[in-house]
Length: 287
Ligand SMILES: [Zn+2]
Image (cartoon, rainbow, N blue to C red; front, side):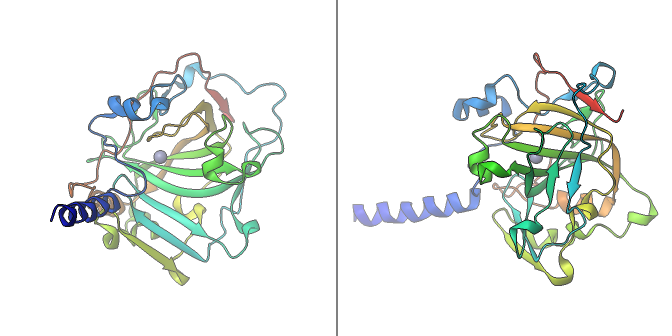
């Protein structure tokens, strides 16, 4: 009887873990307590930060290569979209590895390519907040993160252990005009992943490129050394945050806000509070 019961609770436990998802159990209700289980979250090069335009430094003199996002217009074979309880995450699959979008130049170590791993969003319960980074204290309703890892480290997981392991492109959105009213292609699968722990795969005409998520060039941006903005908060990220905004349809924002978290509550305000800059320098490129 006792054993049977233990088995029963074991099944319950596994079911609960599956619901919470692969990213472990953390909550935006108590971000100040993340460091209790993930010590890096209490480190000195944490993200996000407020980017103060007037105090950003010019690029170092030896800087010459422009930042290049290669493959930004390429469409993958399929895209796996997951509601992991904390965000909507998009993993792209390619026929061959060389098709993966690649980031080089700019603030990245010379000649070292970073390859695309996944993208995801951070948003607010209303249009007055949602972005993780802010510009001179200004918040935006939505911020996308394109996550890349340094190819020489072999995988995202291994790159996490290195101070130069990851590069993340961040772009801000503002609610757009008539042209974007119909909503973005990335927002269409969202009604199918409302429940936390749900995954669907997009194929054929449903797939899209990075360019369609946050189009435009990457010539004007701010860069600083930081971290993942969710546990384990690894201090391995070269942040590249684009100046300016990209339009998003109100409808697409609403679809994000209709997602549910692991407690079946609305998945909104999934942004980490601003972190201290400490002794870091924010560098401005093209500005
Ligand atoms: Zn993020």
